[in-house]
Length: 142
Image (cartoon, rainbow, N blue to C red):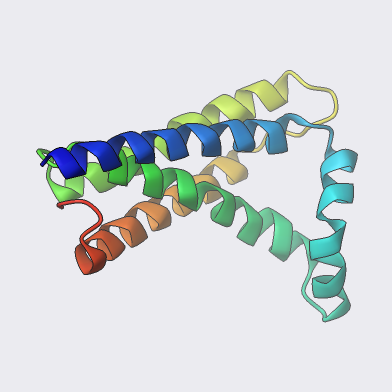
């Protein structure tokens, strides 16, 4: 169990770093973010993948998956796997709502309930993947 306790701290650190990165990504002005993502979006849009699907749909899901995964892995092994996945998903929900509220205060960002829904889906997928992966690799006793 001492080995697992060491890993829990690591996963909380990852969750914190992911949270800081999410704040940095989502609270900067939209044109600045779009410019930073151009190296990713230009080749995809040239191949016919819509910018909206790539960034607004897939992007919102993908960026919250690491948060859901890290929180799920960081939670105590005394909790049931279901509770850990739910709490990992709720962490994504809470953080997404915070971001959207902060974006609502900004003149250069747009707040959206749709983003919250997609972010929660991402956190839930990340939590489920973490649960599956940890059972396969024994990262943390689930």
